[in-house]
Length: 551
Length: 85
Image (cartoon, rainbow over all chains, first blue to last red):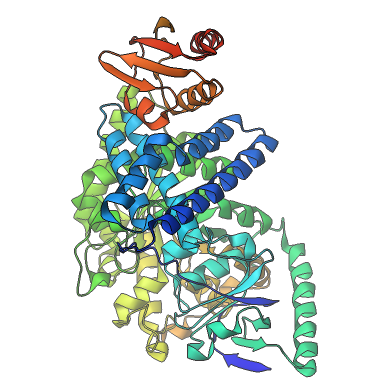
């Protein structure tokens, strides 16, 4: 048995085989080859594999009766063997005496560029199909598995650390738990694990190595321990804990359908944080009363170019409709800092957390902002959408955002497109600046939502991504809690509601303090809803004190 | 050699979906099937080239088939254009 101690960042027990995530080596290097025929044979093999995959996809869609998708995959399969395309690949290989990877990418780019140059927007968009096809052939040439997990059965996924764009591409149905060498409780892997309600540990260090791949493991997300091939004693202990976990889960299910109200009648809005439309299933499963934070970044992180208005509209509308009239707070794009997207072509910053990020990008690039706002307002006709702006530090920023909203509404009205003119507008409170001028900000908006991770980072001058700041990064710090109280007092004085959408909201130990401060809403990962509901229903708001604020 | 002229009536022109279906149709025959718009001629089996011609609604194209089964080919293609484009 090997025992690896890390930091538990998402509770639960899981057992399964360890699978070490291999970062696809997507860098294509031009190489001179000596045996051109062998290279052509590799290409033919990759083409055959691509066609087989596409035919299987088409077959699957045929079974699901989505005829348009069937044709799409069939067309892609035809692209793979298109005479001109193949001739172009082969001639690059022959002319430059180079490897198939390089030739496929060159040919793909040439054909994509040809379509992109046409004056028809529909055909321009087909350039993406060509790139998709070239990408598939490349994956097959380089042995890259889409979804990142080359295993039939679900696994415990180990990695050095995972970037947000990588976690998005993972096939979630194959993941039982996460274990990473680096990372922290605030890393995106940890947040994803909590949303999925599966165990995770981070900071496992170099002892978590690739050589352990394929071995049977138990992971305890509470204690942060990973046991590789556990001995009989450990096995018995883990199995017992697993049974207890199942028992607890059953008991918590009795909370489904209950109201979020304290014993003395104080109501709390208990909402969920989600990162993509597919997370809505977890919200329903855990009986979340709304969405307090829908991170729109997934649309940008998972794409290789700016997502179109229609793509965004579809995602927002899907969630708004699925929530059937319950509030859905959608946060406008929050990239920059730790979430980087290549096609934004951002300049490298010395200190990105304080750089051009979130609303600052939107205000600097009105076209990007306008596209997202149009999609949001169009979706507002299909449910109770609320729009939330991140990283606010000044009143003028909020006014500029509201002007952008007005402009978009006027456009939609002129075009006869339905939207809800009463759509709520709110802001994130995540900078000390926003706390200090909360009274002025509260007059401009319909609600506040506190991002505790960033508020802690900026208030305590502590990088949330850093591994070794552990004890200094303290969301329970009286300074953070006093900031929360100041923002709440300002919100209530202006007659608006305030919530917490950061990880701190799920901290059961903090619930009495939140009740004492007067927080109106808690938005947490779906798996945290029922334990929190049970705690709320046992609380007495009147007797809660502000002692943790140290005043 | 057999041929016919056709005016595209589909609002999107020869977009990806019908282009794919058209290439598939043409592949069934031994005859060489081509499409001409203005002075550009491409084989119907050249899917990407076919798409790159940018054939739109209202464009007049000429379809030709030449080979052993040209009669069957041209009949099938004419039926295809009428049904899909």
